[in-house]
Image (cartoon, rainbow, N blue to C red):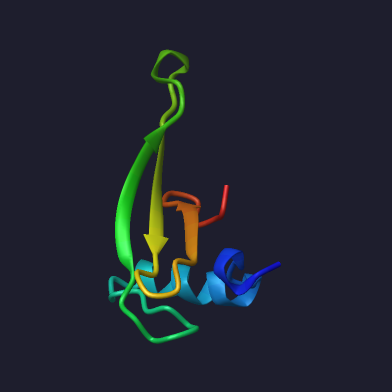
Length: 75
């Protein structure tokens, strides 16, 4: 896998989620850049549930992580 398509490892993802959950700006653990946050809606409104997910993207290295806000998990 090339560095351009590499992902954060699980510990790095956990660190990013913890920063975001504390209400502080999430910082990329690879290069220290403040990450961009994008909200992602989803789920089926007809079935009575909807997910609220956040997509945190490093503008420098282009790595990202998506997690479910309510559960604090990746999916």
